Length: 284
Image 1 (cartoon, rainbow, N blue to C red):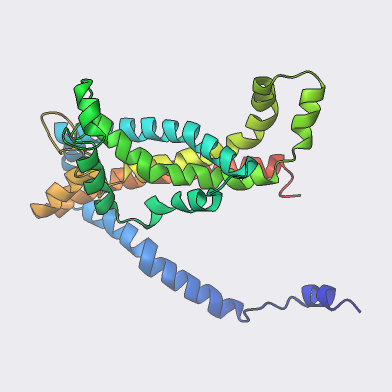
Image 2: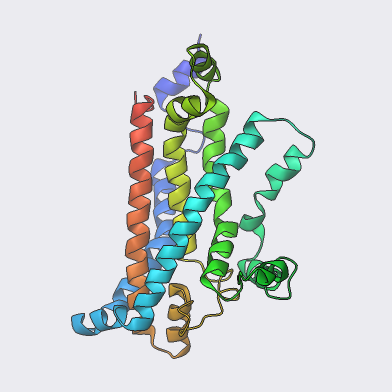
C-alpha cells in the first residue's frame, strides 16, 4: 500500500489547521508589512495634491531621485556582468578556496551597511589604500558619484550571483557540447545556448540589485558626501533630512514615490519569473 499517495489524497499536512495558519500569517503580514506601508500613504495624504506635487518636485528631491536611479542602474548593470562571471566561476570550476570565495559573496548581506560605508569611504579617499593611487591618476572616488556606484556595486552583487547560481547548476552541459559539435564558437554557444537560459535570472538579479541600491542609505551616506552643490545626495538621505526637521508629511510623500517605484520593480521581477516558469513548463 502506497502510504505516501494516501497521505496526498487525504489532504493531510505536516502543520495542521489551515484557518489558524492562515490567520497567523495574515496577522504577521499586516503588523510587519501592510500596516507600516499603509501608514506611509496615510501620512502623505495629510498634504494637499498641490503640496504633495510641490514636495516631490522640489529641486533637491528631483536631483536625489535622478542620482539614486542613475547610480543604482549603472551599479546593477555592472553587477550583472561581473555577477554572471562570478557565478560561472563558482559553478563551473573547482579550485582551492572555492567554498571560502562562495561564502565571501554573502558578506554584503551580513555586514552592517554603515560599516561598509565607512570602510569604503576611507579606502577610496585620497589617502586610502585604493583611493590614493586613483587620485594620483586624477580619479576621485569618495564623495563623488563614482563613490556612490562603488558602494552600490558592493551591496548589490550578491543578489545577481545568488540568482544566477541555481540556474547554472541545473543547466545541462550537453547542450553546450552539442553546439560545439555543430561548429559553434564559444561566444556563439554562450550567446545562443547559455544566455537565453540565464536571461531571466540575470533580469531578476538586476531588479533586486537595483531595488536595493535605490533605497540604500547606510553604505552610501558616508562615501557620497551628501553635497547638495555636487548633487551627491540620495533619496533616502533627503527623507532623513526631512525627518530631522520633523517634516513627516514631506518625508512620507517622498517615501510614497519610492514605494511606488519599488512595487513596479517587484512587479517586473514577478512577471519575469512567471514567464520563465511557463517557458520551462513549471506550471505544467
